[in-house]
Image (cartoon, rainbow, N blue to C red):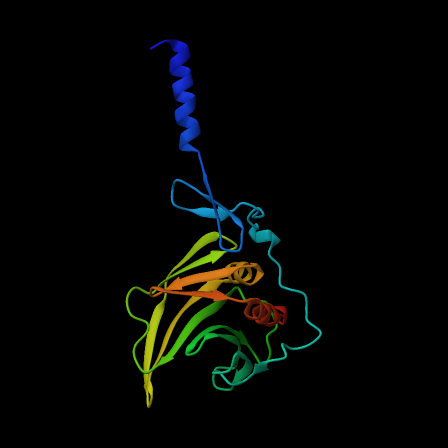
Length: 212
C-alpha cells in the first residue's frame, strides 16, 4: 500500500470513529447520536459550569398552589423541631397520581440563616402494591445530558390502603441547581419514566429562591 493511500485510509478511519448520527424527536428537535450510546440536542447550549449556577432570584409571591398537604400537587413547608433545634424546609410536586418528588434540607436554629451545601432528594410512592422494586438507581436527562445520581436508600411503611414507599439521597446543592435550571428534565426510576413539566420546575425554583 502506498504512503498516500495509507494516510487517506488513516484519515477515513479517524473521521468515521468521530462520526455522529442525526435523528429527530417527535416535536422536530434535532438529536446527535454518538457512537458511545450517548446523545444531545443539536441546538443544546454548552454545559453550565458549577460556578455559573446561582440561586434563582427571589419571587415576589409564593407559588399559587403551594400547600402544607404532602399529597397535594404542590407542597411547601417550613417546620421547626424543638427537640433538635433545627428547621426543616421542604418542597414537593406530584408527578402523577400516587408518585411524588420532594426536596428538603435542615438548618440549625429557628429559621435558615445560610444556603445549604446539599439537599435531600426523595421520591414517594403511595399505592396498594409495591412500586419501588429492583435496583434504586436514578438516571436523569437534563436538556439531553445524561446524569446518573447513583443508588438511593429505601424505606417502606404499611398503610391501611397498601404501601407508602420512599427512596432518598443527599445530593450537592449544585446538582439540585442543575436540575431546576434545566428546561427539560426527564428521568428513569425502577423501569418507570417520568418528566417534570414547567410548573414542576417553577415550583422548585420558587423553593430555591427562598434559600438564605
